[in-house]
View 1 (tube, rainbow, N blue to C red):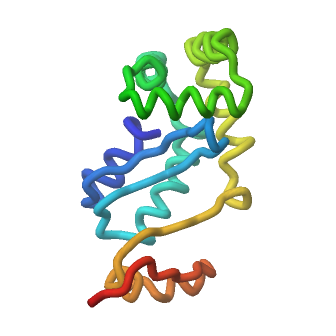
View 2 (view 1 turned 30 degrees about the vertical axis):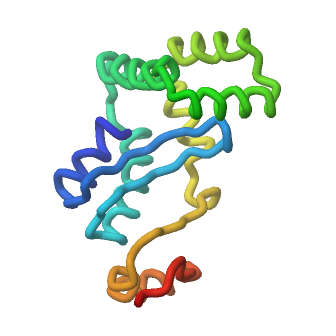
Length: 161
């Protein structure tokens, strides 16, 4: 999704500094994100369109291999001492052994396009999603109708001086 759809839609066409999608095993969540993004509604629409793109586009083996290598690169990437400690803590907390992590890595290498479609169709449903937006007051004000329509609660993290 990130390389095949979201980069073009959010960064190149939408004007954000970046964006994408990622999965976090530590919190059992899949998330879409953008940053320094001038749009709100268009980006949320792009996230929905990325799900549809995953389900309907004819993906090729080269794109799948590139995506798998990106995930494996993230798994194999060296970490800082603090990052290593955090990873060890989460692995211990959730009972993940070295053998389980090796099996997970192997299963990532075996993922097929059909697997990606099945997971997308099963888990990336709009009714299962939670939406949070971190933005400035100006952007929140400019998109107040959308914020109200989506039922988002505005929580101010710091007061402007």
